[in-house]
Amino acid sequence: MKPSEIIVLGSNGQLGKELVKIYPEARAVDKTELDLTDYKATAAFNWSDTKVIINAAAYTNVDGAESSQGRVDAWKINATAVANLAKIAISHKIILVHISTDYVFDGQNQNHREDEPLSPLSVYGQSKAAGDIAASMASQHYIIRTSWVVGEGKNFVKTIVGLANNGISPTVVTDQIGRPTFTETIVEAIDFLLRENAPFGTYNLSNEGNPVSWADLARKTFELAGFKNTKVLDISTKAYYNERQNVAPRPLNSLLDLSKIESLGYKPMDWELSLNRYLRTEYTS
Image (cartoon, rainbow, N blue to C red; front, side):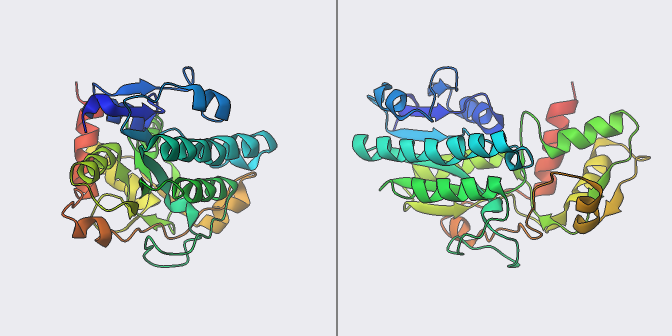
């Protein structure tokens, strides 16, 4: 497989931008060039010489998906578009790499395995679960299930740093547990699976390290970024929901079991090390 035989979809998103860095010769495609929700347009697209499709396109506004229009958009992008890509992958004998999420689970288990039954709580989670099912129909597929993604673009860490820069002490939930996944880690894992010709299927992926709450992730971000005087105010998920409207339900436990991909020889970097490197890269000139 040559980089020129890879197509990156959703190339302007957090993950897409990171993929373009590692695969500069790949064909980068965004929604202005191709509407993946339109099967006729997708089928008419030039897939010749393509060996791998990496689908980084997604609707990720978790709360927005609870609105009437958001529900439609989430299902179109996260489910219908993936079904269209699965058909293309089958007909053209292309490997489909699709990015999933911990939100396909309800968070009741302490450590989510790849074979755990899907149990999404939110519209976003439901649409992503449907996309997983669609992607799995392609005979050659990798479904990469991630959590708490951080990269170049809008994300939790950037939001937290922005608040600190404005002198705001944020209120953050303390009973939702997981580990962040940096886009650099996702790209490394995808490249590893493709290079090693790993068995097709679903792989959990986050950074390694101790489980952490959103509140403690915010504290660690402030510590590493040098905001010593900015405090994080704890709040429970229940109290957070009671204070706000139109908030989508989220899993309390997002911890992903990494033993499957690690058994093949890929071990992600500890999230604290990745966070430190991310902050230095993003905020140090």
